[in-house]
View 1 (cartoon, rainbow, N blue to C red):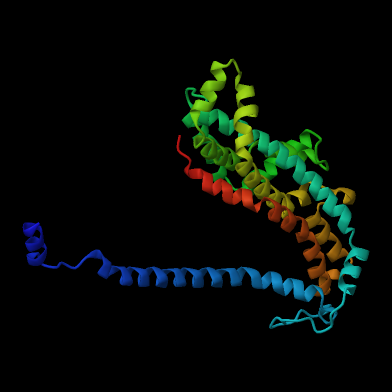
View 2 (spheres, rainbow, N blue to C red; view 1 turned 180 degrees about the vertical axis):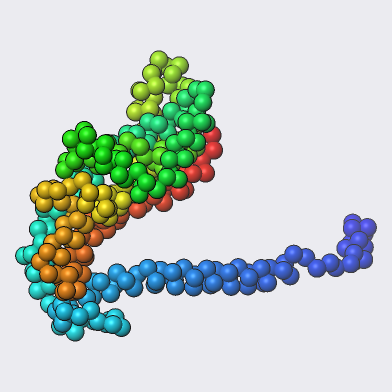
Length: 301
């Protein structure tokens, strides 16, 4: 006991790690403040155009000239802008057409992406890496280079002015295949092995074992494809000639020009605001699955 006490008394006092804690906490706090500031500025840059559009859509005084700089509140608050938009543009019909097109594209691309992603991830076959590289290489070719060949192909197949011109190209969804493969790679191989030992076939393994676990990546693909189809203007402009089949973007573009509404910015803002509602609703319902897909990307077998 005496030796222990003498050792404690004679041992020099060395500075511990606790002295560095205040500086580390200060650095972490400053880094967090900097990060929040940058993200807030970025969010502000993204949000201001949407707020400007929303405020202008209720401003009857902006029906002829768009206000600049943007106003924080409408000068003449009115719902007449939306009334004029619905009277001149068949909004509900175009939204319904876009939903039909988006639903078909989502179903086709989901089946293609998930099945191919599962095969490349869990089924070991020769040349799987080459197949993935070839599929991803198609993403390097811009749509403008394949647009005319696709148009001529659908013309020969007599599929122009039909929604099949949207559904068939969705079979080649290389980015979805890549996303599905990367997600399924994180799921344990032992699930497939146990199912095969129990006598299940590959189709049963996929649909009953792995597919229920793919909800996050399914939600992610749904949102990406829905946004792509909903905002597409060029391809519908090429393949659709019947006004009754117009999608929302094509309908807005054609009818705002034909009806002279392109000179009335408040009416255009009102119609655009209505066209964004389905996208916002879908995102609000599926956003938690996107976060979950990111969180599950670190699962270890």
